Image 1 (cartoon, rainbow, N blue to C red):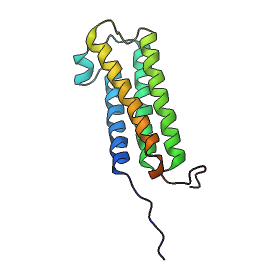
Image 2 (spheres, rainbow, N blue to C red):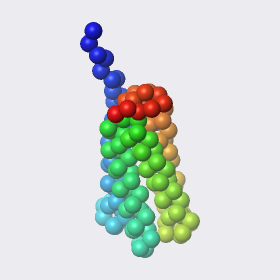
Image 3 (cartoon, helix red, strand yellow):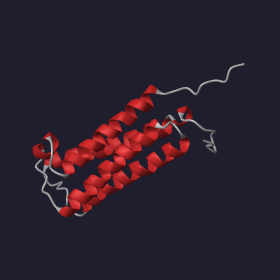
Image 4 (cartoon, rainbow, N blue to C red):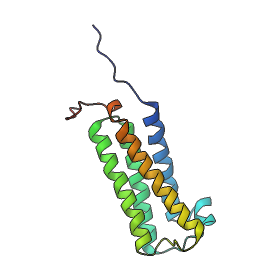
Length: 138
C-alpha cells in the first residue's frame, strides 16, 4: 500500500500569496512608495513608518508560513496576523493614521477586515495543513 500524500489546498496557497503581496504593498506604503501611498495622502511620521513597515513584514512572514503547510508554521502565521491587526490599531490610536477623513478611515477598516478574513480562513482550513490535530510532528 502506498502512503497517502497530504491533500493540498489551493485556497490556502492563494491566501498565502495574497498575504505576501499585501504585505509588500504595506511596506512600500510605509516608506511612501507606490500608488496607494500617494492616493490616500497619509501624513508621514516615524511611528507610521516603523509600525506600518513592521506590520507589512509580518504580513509577508505570515504568507510564507502558511505556504509551508505545517501546523506549527500556520499557528505562527496566525500570531503574525494578530500582530498585524494590533499594529493597525496602534496606528489609529496614536493618530499616526488619520481616520477623520472618509478614504483613510475606510481603507484601514477594509485592510484590517482582510487580515481578519485571512486569519479566519487559515483557521477554517486547518485540516489541510500537515500534522496531527493536537500535535504537529514535522
